[in-house]
Length: 457
Image (tube, rainbow, N blue to C red; front, side, top):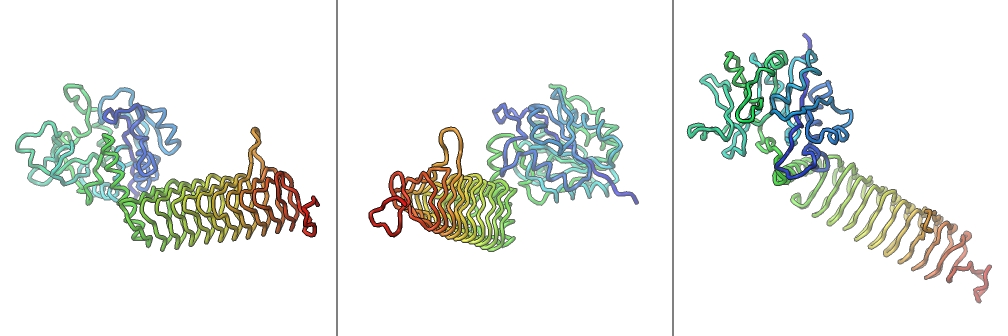
């Protein structure tokens, strides 16, 4: 028996006028990803065919954001959802037995829920199955009207319900699975609805019922999945719902989240077991955190790789790496290209950019390391700064293994401090310091260890 192929269509052509913005609604961010990305991810798991994305308002911007993850068709005139789906007929005709239709502004729909819809249609003798939700609050959704046999016969828009129909609590979510043959024969027969003469997908239900065909409905388990994004208030509501869902998933996986209400974890983040996330922590982008870490409170981590048993306290990390057993904070800042090697320590009010703090090295407080390589077991005194920029170009500082950098040292790059070398407090180092030597003064001179008067070596 041949497997039933499923094609997915995501409708993303609307103007989103209630967002009060020129920005295309499918590109608004939710948990670190555009709304359309959530829809694409949900349908990706259900079909081997590339989904069709129907675009309209802001089409070029949406195309640029989605790239080659979808086939694009454009609804040049906004004539309703039925007209939007009609644009997908040409690229999909004959490719699949079933057509799954969802919206880019319904980001909480899960792949599991959509899979249940597809499975229902596979077993439905009629041409349509749709998702429904039970709620006392319609929120603008149409109500499902059933016949005596339980088949859905029509959908009544919220603005058109009669007094009798107001008691109906089963709502049309807006996701459908169609028999492809029936759909492509009927989608261009939808009658125009007054007063705008637009063509709506919901009319296909009445058309199927008029032919005596059965329309099935699958009730979603979590009504929050039905949330559509029409306003910025809806966006915030969806953000809170997705945050709860994400945090619960990580807690099930063995992560301790002390206060889920103030913990913000985006969809691309991974976290190891026995890690503890403290309140007011934001984990963003493609951040990966190992096992047994302690992150937060009051911490922001963006696109970082954090090893096992690391500690991050009240700090900001961006595109940085922390190896096993390293720690930072409070009030530290790792910028792009920063690396704390195994067992290294960075204390309060320090900043590292495009620089490596070697294994076991310590930078206690109040310093800046930019474009630098710091060797193992080196001590960086308070107030140390690598002066890496000469006004035109960046230059690098090398501090080798076991060096001791005194407080308030200025290292004017390019410069090298040798293995086991030292600088005196307040030194301004403009020339290399050889292995094992001491440099002090402004500008710093290399001292002879046997010369107490400090003559230059």
